[in-house]
Picture 1 (cartoon, rainbow, N blue to C red):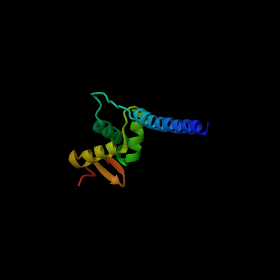
Picture 2 (picture 1 turned 135 degrees about the horizontal axis):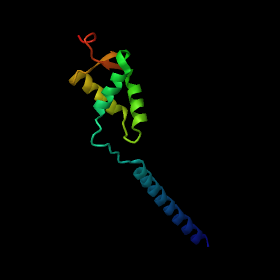
Picture 3 (picture 1 turned 45 degrees about the horizontal axis):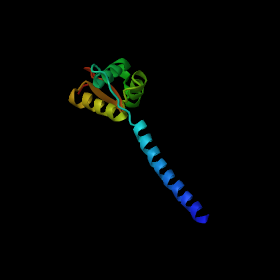
Picture 4 (picture 1 turned 30 degrees about the vertical axis):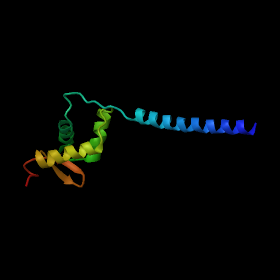
Amino acid sequence: MQRKAQEKIERIQELLDQKRKIDTELEGLVMTEAIFTPMDFVLNDEVLNIIREAGQKGIAALRIWTVLKEKYPIYGIDRKKIASSLAYLKNRKRQIVQAGRGIYRIVTEENTG
């Protein structure tokens, strides 16, 4: 009788271990989403438009991210993508300038140079 109880306990433990592994794998699969953006979506253009709409007072990078997340909730836009876009628009395209720590605005005659 003692031996049979011990075997049951061991089998239950094996099954619980298998269940934990399955739960972990299922959670990983569920949490990994494929995020697709439409062909005509260009993040740099969207960021530039938001900065343009903010006017010469400028807009914080965090606010740009918030606006984009609200406007496009399923696109999976993260802060790294925003930072990359801001760096590209500032350093490569020279269409925006940094007006303060984390604040960006459109390049004008007054703020170039």
